[in-house]
Amino acid sequence: FLADYPDWIRRQDVFHIGTHPPGLISAQCVLLSIMEQNPALAGTLLDHMPATVEAGFRVFANPDPKPLTRAERATLYATALLTLLACAGTVIPLYLLARAALPASAAWAAAALWPLAPCANLFQPVADTAYPLLSTSALALAAWAARSPKRAARPVLISAALAAASGMV
Image 1 (tube, rainbow, N blue to C red):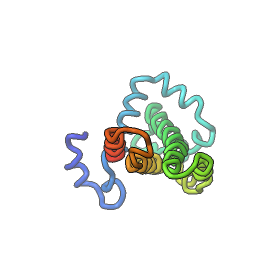
Image 2 (tube, rainbow, N blue to C red):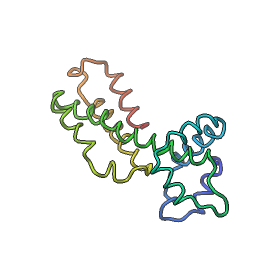
Image 3 (tube, rainbow, N blue to C red):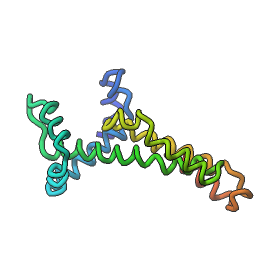
Image 4 (cartoon, rainbow, N blue to C red):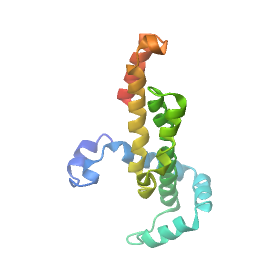
């Protein structure tokens, strides 16, 4: 799929899927493969799925041409769980970002507001809500890389490594 991705993406629309980098699609492929190879894991996820999620699958699952398989349902549910964890986990890099310039109490006060942001819950389980973790992580790494090595009491090489990690994120 990734080898043919440039050709595939050119054939997509210009609105949604045609603008996606391959990361989300690749992640879905990996999760689906895991669920197909581990039916017990898929079963555990499906057995512990809230009734409202199960009802959603019944309402939105298209039986034509074929209904979703157990592995596909488990993959979608796992994606929702992982996305929710990533979104909630944004508190950590947000604290570290604030901590680059603020005392611990002020940094915590700033980071503690994140769970109150309505967009974090409003758009669940859309995978786009995982992006704040990535963007905040990149920004926190950049902020720590930009701190004066004398002030941070660390070698310049550490700052360079933090900057490189920021760019990779």
